Image 1 (spheres, rainbow, N blue to C red):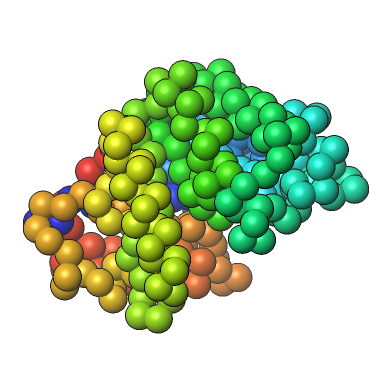
Image 2: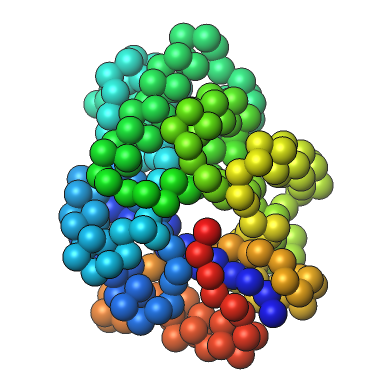
Length: 253
């Protein structure tokens, strides 16, 4: 059987997403979630997790691309924030910014990453797993700063760079980068999956995944305009049927 972690991203983003993720835990659709500690509904998400007994399955969803930073220095750089002091994802949208940043920017970025780690721990959450909004932790400019901080604070697991893709979604250059990043990540000794992708990626690649591999499926639970539980646009019932029919063995990090 294929061992699978099903993680709900964006916990704390807003009240509706929190409710959808809580319902997914109640229905045992997901095994884990990751929290955006800088978003306005982060505390509500933590309360929900603790009151429903899944606080030990909440990791950190490092967020450097949306909302307001926890620290002030990073707001001085247009590569990270706009004139209102909110993240603009500018560094993440350019190849140069994803690979390298200047020393002053790096110092501000490191301060923000550490602040988000400390906020996560201050909430009393214990899983010590990290992934990120828009996968920014897989940017070399971010990972160089995040890696020593994760070791400093005793994080145990990290999401790999996406390596399952529905056909045609990843260029050869990106595949080489992802392979290199994942190989470097595994050398840290932190736990990570063998394969990672979205539900649609799993549908396309499931027949090529070896037995007993550890895989991670990323979901974004929310409610449709009609009030149905969905993964962005995919009915959650479809995903439940897929995991059952494929006999995925669900587990946590």
